[in-house]
Every structure is written in structure tokens, then in C-alpha cells.
Length: 445
Image (cartoon, rainbow, N blue to C red; front, top):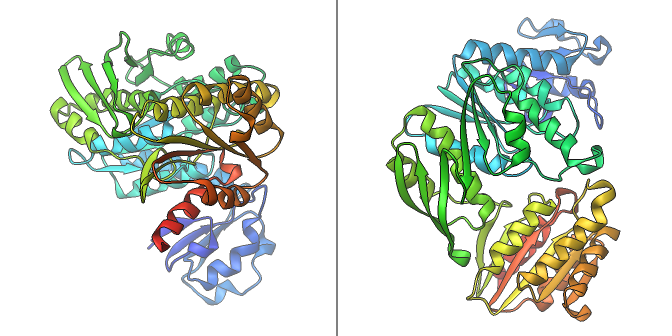
């Protein structure tokens, strides 16, 4: 009896299968014996020399030898997906994938049995690992597909074989690996591959790159948008500062007033995308609006934290130019704070346009009303500072640090009651450390 699957020997439990993945930073074969000691029921390997104990002394342990353990994992995931009978929803885009995935799952839960991929398990290893959970036979599986190079989403689509596809947007993310935003759009368009006339696509009507490429989709199409013509749209959006947003949600089955604690137009895009998908499951609109109105952002994805008399917006999971500008503008719409402070980490993988995009975001910060900027990273954040100064922010209101630890120590000294603090940056800059320091200090005070 197989209890579970893992590629991490530290998480192996009695009865699990250990799959020895040969990755760029590690070789799972080095941990085969540890997994056996922890009670693995069996192992999948491509190198027989990895076994240095006599596993044959236990009749309960089996070994499967394959040419490529990653490919074996992917084939196993696809096999389980095909046997599960589950309807699979695959979500991709440059921004909002994870939040949209979580929203879709929340909207469907209560009406059917739902599985969602954990965290950001959205690559060539995380996706098939998630598919292995479909052996529990949920009615719907909501998956996130990510990429940073051409062909990656194509591979993931061939593994997941989605029934429903959601394409949120195209933005300048991972630009270091592409020559243009059009190439990024082409890579994202791989979400359309392998579809038949029975497939369904939910696409962003406000993104012309998405819509142009979606014309070839052979199945049915539902569009979503904010303040524009679409099958599901948010109209008359009203920003309520840090209290969230209101909008009239218009759909083919009626219109409803929605109030959400989420902050920023980007999240409104996520909301209408999730509703557009959930409507395909014939869930009443009233239920959908009620469920989404109680949805709260996860840590690192725009979560609002009250720290004494300060408010911290934890948007530290990742960053790109479009998402950062949206966050700056959303926080700038709040009129109740005494001071707006931006603690911003370098945006990585932007390639040749990194300097100009950082400079643009610096200008946006000042236009949005930020009066203090703390920067973390290398040369690129100097361009952000340059943009802020060009827009009129005094140089003395900008501080730059090479590490998040240094920035946190400085922030703790200058933050004060009444501040609204936006913390955002690419994952490689570890901006979550700053949020943790601020909240920990408050808890101890």
C-alpha cells in the first residue's frame, strides 16, 4: 500500500515512495538511503549505485529503475490525472496566477470536492507532484502553470491535460530570458496547446496579446475584464483605500454589487477571472459573490497587517514592474494615513530593460504619494531611486541597502505611528525578512 510520494527524503513517512530527482542543485540519489531508513516503501531511481544498503533484506521495499526520474515523475503524474476522473483547471499568466488559483478553489469549495496545488508548485516537478494527489479523486483540480523559458508551459499542458484553461495576462516578467514581451506572450500562449472543441478558455479581454493569441483556441471562450466589455466584467470600480474595493460585477446570469477587502485593480482582475471560471460549474452568482467577498490575501500577496498604529502591506512573495506599479497606486489611494513608506526590493530577471523599468517604478512611487522610500538590492534599485528623485522626492528621503537585514534594521528606527508601509520585492531579495522583523518587534513590545 502506497501512502504518498516525495522527492525530499526529509519529508518521507512510512509507506511513501521516494523519487530521486537529479536537479540542478542536488541529486536525489544521495538521499536514497536516508529515505529507506525513514520508512520508504519503495524508491524510483536512475542510478543503481545509489543503493548502498541491502534493501533486499526487506520484502516490503521495492526499487523501480528508470532512465530519467523527472520524466518518470511526469508520466506518473499524468497517469494518475487520467485515472482520477477529475476536471482539471490550469491557470497561467505573468501575474496573479496563485491568487486566482486560490480564489477559484474557494469559489468551487462547498459546491464540489476540490484539490488545489500547494503554494507555487507550478513547474516541471511541482505540477506532476501535485497531480499525484488526484489519486484521492477530487471532482475538480485547480493547478497553476508557471514558466521562465519557452516550451515549459507546453510540457506542463501535456502533463495536466486541462479541461479548463485560464490565462490572466502578459507582463514583463523573466525578461532576461526573452528578447521581447511578444516572446513572453508566445510562451504563455502554450496554455492553448492540445485543446479540443470540448475545452474551455477563460481569457483577459483587457490584454490584447492574450486575446490575439486566443483567436486560435478551438473550444469555447469566456472573457473577463475590468471597466471594459467582457463576458464577466467589473464595472464602476471604487477604490476604498486599505479597506478594499467595490464594484458592480456583470455576468451573463445577472449583475451583483461586490465589496472585497482586496486592494488594487490587479486583484479585481483576479476576482472576475475566478468568477468567470466558476460560472462554468453552474454555481449561483449570489454564492460566488458572497464567497469572494470573504476572500483574504495570503501572506506575501498583499496581506494587510496592523502593527500597532502602523499598517504593513506584505506583498513580499515576488515583484515585477506591472505588479509593483499596481501596488503603489493601490496604497496611494488610501487617504487616512499620515505617511506612506515604500520598502522595495530589486526586481530580478528583467534583462536589458531592468534600469528603465526600475526608474519608471520610482516615478510611480512618488506620483502615488510615497514620502519615504527604502530600497534593497544592487545597481537596479539605484535606477528606482533616480526615477523617484526625478519626480521630485528629496534625495534625503531615499535610503539604499544591499541586504534586507540592513534595511530591516533601518526601518525599525524610522517607522512611526500612522505610517502605511508597502513591502515588496523579488523573491531572491528576501523582503519577507523585513515584514517578520516589524511584526516581531511589535509583538515583543
